[in-house]
Length: 116
Image (tube, rainbow, N blue to C red; front, side, top):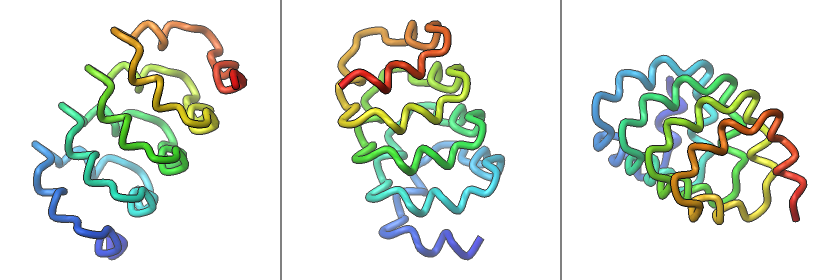
C-alpha cells in the first residue's frame, strides 16, 4: 500500500469514520489519482463506496468534488455498470437534482452521458 503515500495532504483520511471498509476496495491504488481528494471525507456513511464494482473509473470524473454534495448518495452504488457516469462532461449539475435517488431506477441509463 505504498501508493497511499502519494496522496497529497492525506491527513483528511483520518476524518473518515469507521474507514475499515476502505480495505475492501479492490486494487484501490487509483484512489491516489483523484485530485484534491480531501472532499471524499465529506461523504456521509461512505462505506457504500466499496460496493461499486470496478470503481477505478471514479478517478476519471473531472472535478469530482461535487459528488460529496449529493444527499444520501448511497443509491449511486445501485446503478449497474456505472462507469459511464465518468463520460458525462461537467456533470456537477447532477448534484442539483432534488431527491435524485430515482436516477438509479432508470434502466440502461448510460444514454444520459449522451446529453450535451
